[in-house]
Structure formats: structure tokens, C-alpha cells
Length: 326
Image (tube, rainbow, N blue to C red; front, top):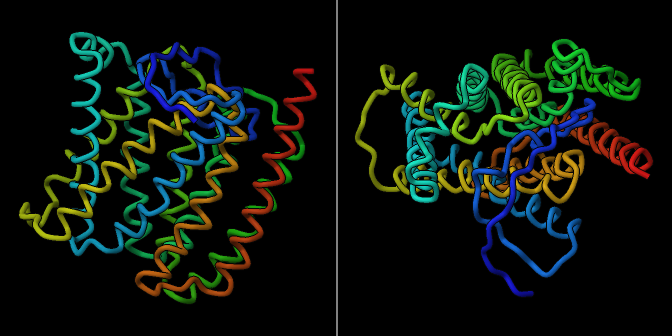
């Protein structure tokens, strides 16, 4: 395969989330002028981009666990480093247009940035109060929370299978919550669920204003998170492995974003969404292999149920799209 870099056009179509999970179609590619071009067909290209993006992000929870910083310091550096790196990359690529693009995000972009802020905070605190497996299982509910918000705020009619999936996932979450409450991990699971809601709200905003370039909004959200955490940072001294691991987060939460946001140009977002089940499956695996943090029995059972529900729901939505397009 020949791999080279070439310009790409904007992804203008709006993400019809149908409530199945077109979560990344609203991330416009107009401002991203590079793309790995491979001698493959569109489905293969999109699949490869989604796979690479999700695989890059799967070690993120392991890096978080291996950092010895307190929660607020971790939140600060995990947000500051990626935001600065992405901003510098944007500035290098688009030069004088950068500040215009940031200004053009308008109120919707600011609202989206606040959702990113909320998602960042709740994600870190979820990991602080519960295990990785529970956190990522709650995060896997993002497609369904976005579907719920789209139905409420955008008045988009959801298919019956979407509502059935939501109810089934809710029962699985309650099953996990019950054990977490007895183990004193309920708060962490709750933060994980809040994180899924914040990200779902973010996707709904992007769905509503698909003509806006939300890449600067994402960078702003990461920077606002760093500013929010700043007063609570215990120490600004970061050295050794802490510096290495937090610097690697530039890749896990920065570079992965580029691949994932470009994948829907070639495949539908439900197809991209399926790959995110890899994070739910592999994230706890990396942590278990390297630092022996084992998920509980209820987490494994409830997580398996949720993954299967979302997997088959996504497959159904993809099939529905294909039959509609035909």
C-alpha cells in the first residue's frame, strides 16, 4: 500500500444521529488539510481510520492510572498539553486563519466547549472513584445519551429499537450500580454516567450546527478544562514518568481525535461507533495486564450486556441506512 499525505475537502453533511450513533459526523474535516490516503476503497479507508483512532485512545486510561499526580493536577496537565499541541498544530497548518476560525465557532462552539469541559472533569473523577472497567462501560453509553438528547432537543424521532436499547442498557447500568454502591464505588459510576451525558450533549450541539467547524471548539474545551483545574493544582512540578505519561496523552486524546473525526467521511458514524466498543473492551484489559486492576463479576456481566446491546443496535442502524440509501 502506498501511503501519502494529501488535502481533503470539507465533510459538510450533517450527522443524522438517528439516534443510533453518528457521533463523529459532525466534526468537520474542512479545516483539516491532511489525511492518510491509501490505495483502498472508501469503506476500507474509513474502517482503517476509525480502527487506528480508537486503538490510539485505548491506552489512555492506563496512562491515567500510571500517573502519580493528584486528581486536579492530572486534569490540568491532561488538558493543557493536548490543547497547546493541537493549537500549535492548527496554527502551523492554517496560519492567519486560525484566530478567525476560533472566532467563528460562535455561541454554539462555546456551549460545545463547556460540554467538553464537563466531560473532561467527570471522566477524570470517574476514574478517581471507581475502576477503569466501570468508567468505560458508562462511557460506552454515549451513543444512546446522544440519541436521547437529539430526541428531546432536536425533536428527532427515534426508532423503537433505540428506546428498547436505552431501557435495556439502563437495567444493565442499575445492575452495575447496585454492586458499586455496596463497594463504595457508586460515585465513580455516577461521574462516568455524567461524562456520557456531557459528551452526548456535545454531539447534540454539533448535530444542530453542522455548518460550524467544531475543531477549534474542542481545543477551547480542553484549554478551559486546564484553566478550571488551575486553582486546585497542588504542585506545578512535573518530572520523570509523570511528565512522560502526561505528554503521551497528547497522542491518546489529541492525535486520536484527528483520525476519528475523519473516519465518517468514508463510513457512517454507526460504523465508527462500533469501533468504540474496542475502548470499552481493551481499556480495562491494558490496566489489568500492567497494574492488575481486575473488574468485578457484575461489571463483566453488565458490561458484556451493554456492549452486545450497542453492537447489535449499531448493526441494525447501519443496515437501516443501507436499505434506505438503496
